[in-house]
Length: 559
Image 1 (cartoon, rainbow, N blue to C red):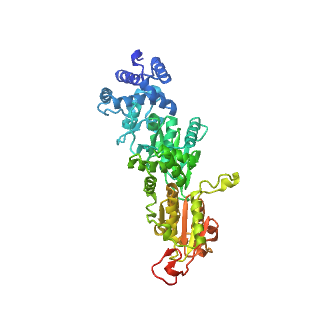
Image 2: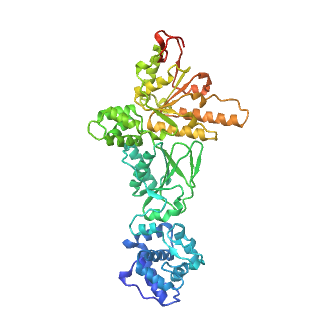
Image 3: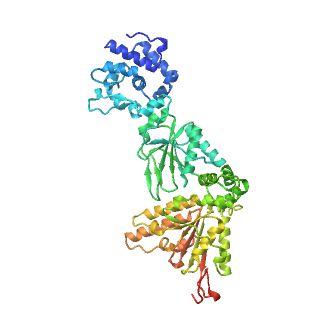
């Protein structure tokens, strides 16, 4: 029977060391002393400050008394040189400073610990104890603890490889979005909502800002796990470091993502995704598509970014953008410095921030004035109406009934038809200049692919980026992408029609501004034409004094 512990030794580490010395000094103890059993129960019930995290892990994940004591001894070895030397002496000549599985099983056998439990029990499954990779029998393999976990249990902070803190810039969020995020976090904490929350937004920055807010509400530090990292591998570290795991998944249309098994993790989990694709998980989940702020909220966001009230009001009307995009532009504005920010400065900052489109679309900086565009009066009026439609797209649903407002889409889709040289491209440039939005011309060669599904994925990417940046997206020779469906003769026709079906649906759901140009309206699928907000025909006529309908020409004659 071992001697009772003095009061100053009533901690996990002291208890483990006391048992180590007792076993090493007197082999064959048949069971734990009553005082040791009661002391351990007292420590687990009301742990001291240095034992609180370890005891909390033991209670949360169902560790036995033997596993808890083994973890306390392993932690002592990792943090105290004296304990490491004592272990090395006790195991000489078989082991080193890290305790062997058989050694720990001998010391804590009275608490039900054995080698198999050390290798595959709850402590091993959550990553609290790690079995060494020595080429030796199980009993002679070392038991260690990951360095990041040692730091977390000691009150420090060290992320494992492949995990990094969620770092975001200063991103203001609408009050309604903040309230909703906090309410969802509260429901997750109360287990009234699934712990897995999927945040959907075309803006990663906005999703990350919401993730940071949810983490703050839950008093957890958001950390991003790389593609090769799994939650199940880091359960213990996530719990000990009070971290909120965040996953990122980028999916195209029709793609499915099966989220891996989370192992013993029972806490909240966030997954950031775009608007496309299907997320599948081994447990229930909730999806939240982040809404676009309304005009009043956008004014407040621009002002939070340092823009004065008058310009903020003008920017909120001109740009239909979310919190993430506004924060990006505000950062560029801040680099300008000075107190006299002009509208031109704000436009320049907004124009410089649509880099996501560069791979599939080309930025056009041509400045077309009204006098460069010569069109018949009726076409000029139609273009002015289209400009008004773009400017007022965020307000047209006001005053409508609930059913009409629910079906209203603020996106603007226009088709310009006419022969080459009639001014379709000039008109698009002029419209973009009038409404104050950047113009991006889609590179159809980069958009289309021979691989099934890649064209749809490329289109989805460019539409999401254009909607996020709020630009005018121009599809020249658009009939090559949105052509009419054909009768199905073979598998190629079937896949082509499936692609057209997706494109029709996706352009209909687009909430930005898209202008399509073609030489012949008849080449378009009739179902697509019905989805357009405006169809403008550019006619080729011979006029006097060398003026060509749509643009000026240098020589007289007929066209």
